[in-house]
Each structure stands twice: as C-alpha cells, then as structure tokens.
Length: 196
Image (cartoon, rainbow, N blue to C red; front, side, top):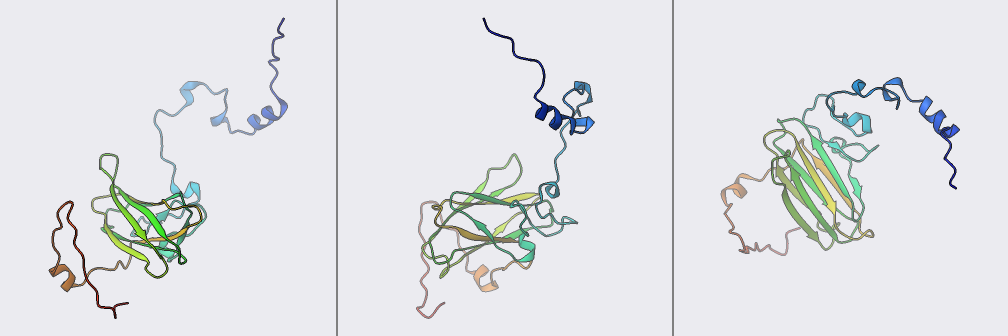
C-alpha cells in the first residue's frame, strides 16, 4: 500500500514563503490580484534608461552603460542584444559594429511596435577591425528597438554601439547621387586604391 505524502510543508519552503510580502502571498485571494498587467520599468532590471526619455538609448545588457556614454557592448557569438528607446523625437540611430580582427557576422533588426514587420539587415565583414561596419537606421514614428544578433560562432564576439545623438549624416553630394536599386540587381562602387 502506498503511504500518503505528508501535508506538512518543507521548513525551508515555509521560511521562504513567509518572507514574501502580503501582496505576493500564495494564500491571498484571487480577487486581490490586479485586473491588468503593468509594465516593469527598465530601471527595475538594472538597464540604463534615459531619465527624460530624450534622445538616449537604453541597452538591454544589465549593469552596462548604454551607448549614450559612448561605450561598446560585447556581443558574444550566437547571442542577441537590444537597444530600446521610447522617444518619438529620435528620428535615426547609428549602429557601429567591429571586432578585434576576426570575422563579423551579424543580423541587425529594427522593431517598430507589434504591428510592423521588422526591417532586417545582414552584415558580414571578413576583418571587423580593419573595416568596422557603420550604418544609420531611420526610426520614425514612436518607440523603436534595435536588435543586434551575432550569428557568428562563439569564438567571434563583436563590439556593438548604438547612438542616437550626433549621428553621422551623408554629405549633400552623396544625397544628390543616390539611386534606386531594383530587387535582384547588383550595383558596385569602385574606389581609388588611396582611399582608406
């Protein structure tokens, strides 16, 4: 015959449960639960968030300063880091990726709310120290998130930085010579050997 398990709680579990505040008690009635969910602020998770939600960007990496302080974040191979900002006044951000002489293989995505299709960019550079990648991503109309996924192997980390202030903009000459490139087409741009 099977013996019934004791209904007596484990003493360590009872001690842990007694440390919970009353609002989190397991014995609280269901009616005491809030009717709707509330979003937890980024500061609760230890991420850097702008105080006035200005043109700063907050990193999802805990304990690290955001790009507003000009610090790069190390993204290990196979991992994802996100930078979120809530201000609609941020019209564009600059994404800078580099490595210490190793290959750089990454996906960059722009997430604009639940109803928009992500914009995705694939980046591959053979030597991320000799040729760091830099791009300006337009972020119109409200809160946005930039996601950078290092799709390289774990041996190939990359340094990522996303900034919303002092973004490099193309020259007037560059804007005058822009052209549409149709899907499936290839356009090459020759450079003089003296160009760095």
